[in-house]
Amino acid sequence: MLKLPLFADRVKPVTDRCRSDKNTRLRLRFDPYYNVVEEADGINIVCRGRRMVMMSSNEYLGLSTHPEVRRAAQAAIDEWGTSPCGSRLANGSRAYHVELEEELAAFLGKEACHISVAGYMACMSSLSSLAQRKDTVIVDKSIHASLWDGVRLSGADVERFAHEDMDSLRALLTQLDPARPKIIVVDGVYSMEGHLANLPELVELADEHGAFLVVDDCHGFGVLGRQGRGVSDHFGLTDRVDLICGSFSKSLASTGGFIAADRATIEYLRSSSQQIIFSAAITPSATAAALASLRVMQKEPEHLARLWENTRHLQGILRALGVDFWESPTPAVPIVIGDTEKVYFIWKSLQEQGFFTVMSMSPGVPVGKDLIRTAVSALHTKEMLDRFGDALKVAIKKAGYKPQKVAA
Ligand SMILES: Cc1ncc(COP(=O)(O)O)c(C=O)c1O
Image 1: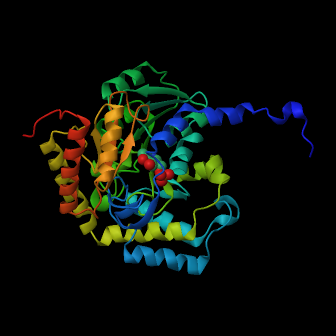
Image 2: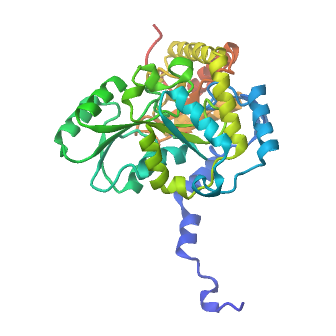
Image 3: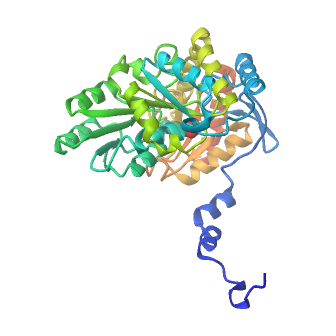
């Protein structure tokens, strides 16, 4: 088609926005994200042509290369093909979905469960239609982006309380109209901080104010509680948490996510959540990998035991180095540096010494809390973690980072 010369050279405003975006330019210049792993065998990877140990994967139990998990995913493709090609509500429901939902619900101690293509979708769908206009959703300000999206889509009023601050939550609840429906939303384990939700106080406050309690347990599932049943089981409070959402991409070594609650809540979400109704069902292989991992978790306790041994070992190393790890009591271990430039240099030096980590800067974390996010896996060996400690010591010295406290 012939273009009019007047319009031919005009850059559209949206195209211009993309080309001139400052964050994108900075990212491309320093190139810290979207690192492509060229080869992987568990946590041993090759990235940018260099052999590295993965120190930032969420594969807590190390099951993605487990023979039974691999075999289950392969067999599912042989039996069912690659995709159900449709939403659960329409043509996409399969026997393997129901099998995983039933086993997950029983494992978690909830009546029913619904699974989705991503943890993000599951967490978002747990709120987007559960909350409605004129409801109040009260959130810890550090909840995951997926929950924020769910809350925003719901159109409900939002109140936030300071991270893990139960006094601030109590004060908020007391000020709110008692007649209005309320939902409290927290992470079971906060993904950046590694902190554990104060469930004993949360359930008390929720009950006292008639608030529905939603817990995103993406980082607690597989890690805490009996056989990895999660944060609610860890505190013995499963019955008092109304809805648990989680991910398959961490302990379950797959991709996908779940919501678990009483049957009425799950059926309500199945008939009202746009994300559930209008998105295709999770694939056979992803479902089968998650189901096989769930079964391995229950019959092979050694993975969970090793995860915690490794976590304690890394905590000891970081304490000895005087590094601030935000007092994380879980395998999600932040190394708080508090200065963007230093974080970058430490991250780069760790890569050069063969350790893959991920940086997280403000606004992803609070100002002054810029950090290197590490996560422990059952696949790490003590020797790997010791070497990581040595590399970190070199990196922080080079970057001029002053350790906060001296080891006890
Ligand atoms: C707390 C939390 N919620 C939700 C998600 C989303 O899960 P997925 O990556 O499986 O989509 C994540 C993932 O990082 C997470 O950390």
